[in-house]
Image (cartoon, rainbow, N blue to C red; front, top):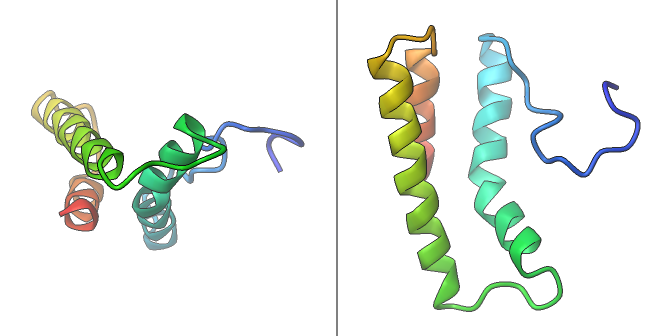
Length: 89
């Protein structure tokens, strides 16, 4: 365990390019909107109006990050980019 106590949802995300790690990151990202919604409104949760707005903002941000990472060729795994896009679409 890297951190005995951590409230950072990113602290346990795998970083290598093995199939198991890619699947773990994909699972984490598919649950990420729920994590953000809970962080934003912990007591009441998001409303039916807020949830699609949050999802749209996350999708746009994610596509922007993927485009920047892939276009500048910073060694970002293209397979990971595709998995992320498929999970969010």
